[in-house]
Amino acid sequence: MTITRFVAILIMCIAATMILFAGCSSANEPTATQSTAKLENTPTVYDGEESFQNRCAVCHGELASGTATGPPLVNRLYEIGHHPNFSFHNAVNNGVTAHHWNFGDMPPIPNVAPEEIDAIICHVRDLQRAEGIAAGDPC
Ligand code: HEC
Image (cartoon, rainbow, N blue to C red):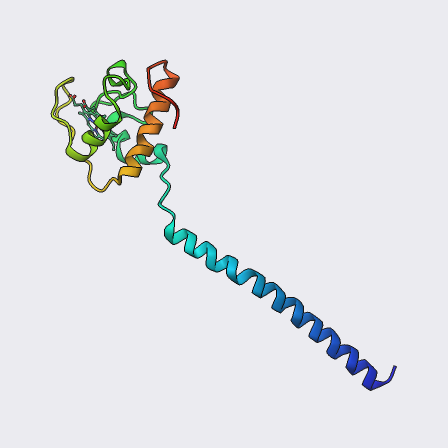
């Protein structure tokens, strides 16, 4: 093999590699842009159980079975017919004046997005349903 031929083959290899990489990057770029755009437009998806643990469990208990500072939400009193989902939104946004129990008032819980409250409700309803309490359809 002459030097010229060797150099020619080498150049072809380099060119082929460059085309391959150019192909890869141009294929990836739109995907990367799309996924960024998607992230910006997609509303936050809340994990109802995690939110419940962070925001409600301190009073209502990890399993929503109550503590010394708040009543059990897994209780027939809170079945969907007596306390529909809007009463949860109400409780979180406006607080609750003690009326069913002797735990005192529930304070409003600040900065909980409506979608986060919905996720919490889904979680509490799952726990209720597991105990045979009327809780509507699973979310
Ligand atoms: C500081 C303690 C505390 C925290 C935190 C708390 N609650 Fe409560 N909650 C209470 C108490 C006390 C009551 C009972 C009031 C009563 O006597 O009826 C109550 C009642 C409720 C009720 C019944 C409302 C009604 O109409 O009777 C709902 C629903 C509720 N809480 C949901 C939540 C959710 C969801 C969270 C978390 C985002 C939460 N609570 C966080 C203390 C708390």
